[in-house]
Image 1 (cartoon, rainbow, N blue to C red):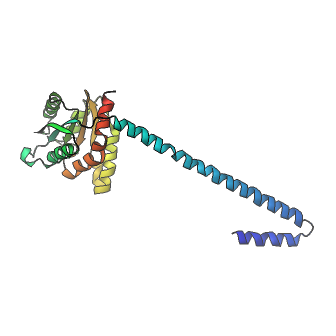
Image 2 (tube, rainbow, N blue to C red):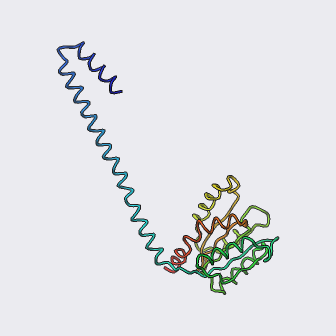
Amino acid sequence: MGHDGHDHDHDHGHGHSHSHPHSHDHGHSHDHEHGHDHGHSHEHGHSHDHGHAHAPEGSAVAAEHKARAPVHVSAFVVTCSDSRDAAHDGSGKDLREGLSAAGHTVVGHTVVKDDPEAIRGALAQAQAAGARAVLFTGGTGIGRRDCTVETLRALFEKELPGFGELFRMLSYQQIGSPALMSRATAGTYQGMILFALPGSPQAVRLALDALILPELGHAVRELTR
């Protein structure tokens, strides 16, 4: 492009010999101004990089909050299923093992039917055991009997929609479009944080490893502020 422009300037100057100095000066001035503006835009572009400099500061604040968070959280696991019992509770087992491996204390677990009264009863059991986090697995789909989300959402003091949003995003990356049928969510209730997770072992491991364990202590700390 620069070579074509140079040929054009040369032809223009040749056709108007008397005005060539003026045309040349004008062309030079235009090029110089354009170059200056272009350089300025680059400098302005660097301000975008400067904006990114705030990220480490935000990360430092988040790290400070996490550093003050409790390392060990008392947790309770509830499996909601009409077809599984304690002997065939793979998802509940994965949750208990994952929590324990991360240093948290599992104060109890139970398997209940997909029934609102049974789910509320399990929550009362978890609260009596001193749980600060209760992880429910199962009953978050769109089946006729799936009622975990409705039961817990009616109790939430504050819902955490970001949990479900992030979980479905991560789930979509693993299984594709079926992720849209998950209604996983989380919220707070009487000083506890409740998680409603799908019933599949793959889903509970994803939620636990990617979202719950990294933020569990932080979330519980926020409940006490």
